[in-house]
Length: 144
Image 1 (tube, rainbow, N blue to C red):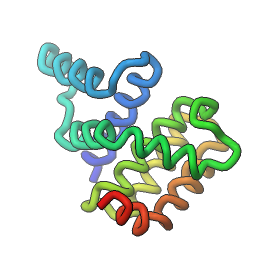
Image 2 (image 1 turned 120 degrees about the vertical axis):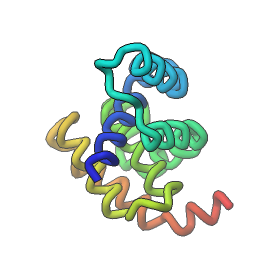
Image 3 (image 1 turned 90 degrees about the vertical axis):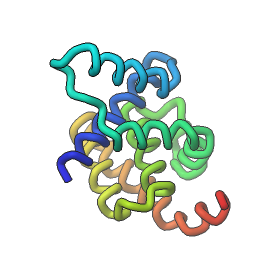
Image 4 (image 1 turned 60 degrees about the vertical axis):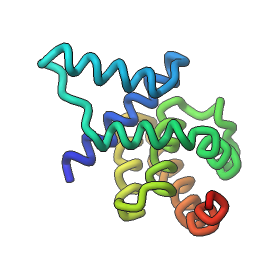
């Protein structure tokens, strides 16, 4: 599963870059793909990375709405950029991707928070995504 781990990390980096630059994530994804094809030193963008970024882009408004609704004490724009994008990726994979166990999604997102964010971020990410996991059945019914 190291390939999926790498795919998630790269998807997070694409979401983060889009957020930082104020550019649509699909544009950033296209840039990454183009760059990897033009420069053999760059690793290719995996299918799963593309699936995560494209899926997030389709659900972005709903994901931001859910994060804003269930993050206690934090508005979306006040959240650290790293945390916001880990949560976006995690919320997408947790709610809309059926092939990955929920516990794996939570663990992977907590690991990204440990690697890229503050000491408090892993527990924040775990708590918010844990809440979305509890609500997943009702959230999916709303989407149907």
